[in-house]
Length: 242
Image 1 (tube, rainbow, N blue to C red):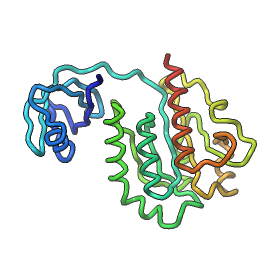
Image 2 (cartoon, helix red, strand yellow):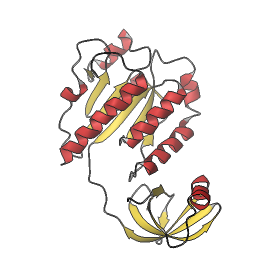
Image 3 (cartoon, rainbow, N blue to C red):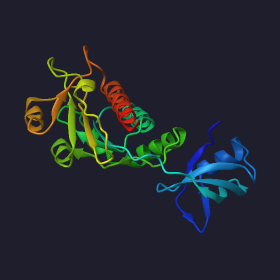
Image 4 (spheres, rainbow, N blue to C red):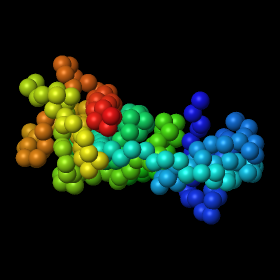
């Protein structure tokens, strides 16, 4: 059975510390004791570590050894147009589990009014959700959750392979359009539209550099489309590494 993994702020001189709610969960729910071993990450490397002390708000670890790093891989950026926050949180959680490297909240023209203003105050919560999902899925590194951006700003920052999901018939399937993603230097940016879809102005903005792709017949909810597309990208990336 795989050991549970936790993220710590830093590893210094062979020691690390977990504090706050996560430490309380270890102490009160899991009832950890000195001598038990877990995996910890400081978002740089992963270590096998042994518990040396426990109290209600703090767990201290001694590093036993540094574990082999994960294989290098192509990087995935998910540009997610703002949707209702409970659905946005679900998108962030599942995209993290599926291996996204960066999530960019995007204010599209048809994003619901008020979401951009509210999103700025949600970043810390979204990062907490990503952290918890990273621990659950045993990631070695946390994804970056960026501050909200306008569509023009967000798309201008991306390089590599760039795709946006299109609901108008005629776009090729995402799976058919994807490259092999064989080298770690490859990067893929995937843009998901809002619940109201893209405007003509936005399509004109994307047209020079972004490729329209489809998830097949039917119209998916924004969060469903994001997670389904992330699953395809994750599988394609894993297949290329074998």
